[in-house]
Image (cartoon, rainbow, N blue to C red; front, side):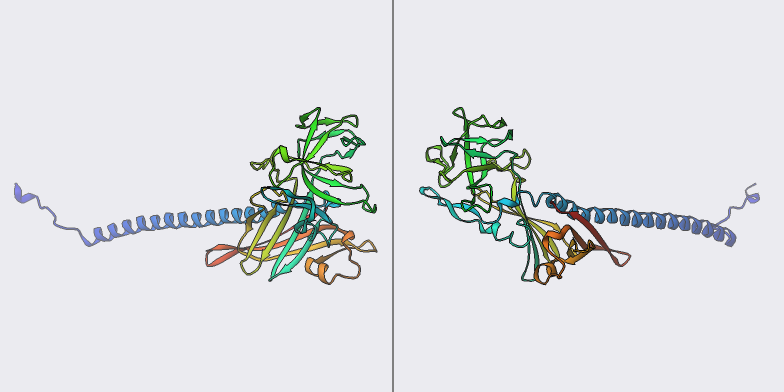
Amino acid sequence: MHKMFKFKKGYSFVELLVSLFVIGIIFAIMSIIVNLNINAYKTTKLTLQNIYADSYVSFLFDVLEGEVKWFGSGREFLANLYRPTFVPNSPSSYNPMGAIYSEISNKVRWFGNYFDYERIGGKDIMYLNYVIAYPVTLKRNTDGTYSPISAGYMGPSGWSIIRGSLSKNSPNYFARYAKLRFYKNGVVFSGGYLTPNDKLTVKEINLALQNTSTDIDLRAQDLFITPIARFKKAVFNNGYITRSFRQIRIIYDPNARTIVMEKFMPALDLTQQVFPTILLDNVNSFSTYILYRDMMGQDKEVEIYRAKYSPPSDFTPDAAYAIKFVVEWESPWRLFGNTNKITKTRIISLVK
């Protein structure tokens, strides 16, 4: 019986071809699946990178708009603003009208007492200044106390602008920056609604020591006090509120390809007054234009450098109504051998 069965050794040529064909189909299908996954990954990556890039550049404009909407507030205080001078731990050195606050007043000369621009070492620098005050101005009474000119809410003790007159045309006019303590009925005022019938005792904090024992009386010529607003956000340890009075410096460095925002905090009791933040890197170009309306009512624009240093004959800062920012950003990554470039524009209205 064993002679009737023959066992085949190996495969025939046809079987080998069929096997190779099947294997080829399997590999082809796998290759297609892999290529589809790779292309899907590339497409997804490109989409995500584009979304990131768009959001990244938009963040710059969101920050700028958040600051520009404030500047112009309190412009009447900023020109020729005095600050106290003092030597730490030497109370007798304190001088309420020590010097012009040059970091502020020297950067509001050009544009409506709140905005300036300059080009230094190839860098474009914009200075945006603002003061946000409470809607209450205190007037000195004959007994040396202070009362609101009109009713309104006023926050707790803090930084204020003191003036000798409400009119800049008055020979008695001056504006100075000081840190004050307000007392109502012998107790430190913690904020609340005030009327012209209320009387506050006001003491100036001697920044050389900042101890209640060294507080000084205000001078007879300190006739009006405008307290600077204190918000509940972004509070430093000493209670200074960042969004009430500050100078924003927008610095474009074409060599470093960066746009940096420096926040200058005028409070004189801070150990650090300048806080830099890189808003955008990999910047190919950043241009700023002033939008204005000429005498004929025509809308025009002028690049900020020209507006400052060689303005058109029909341009004046008073005619400006908006600022236009244009930025070109290039991605640091490459996909399909190319970088991604984005150009964005944002127009922001000015405070009037």
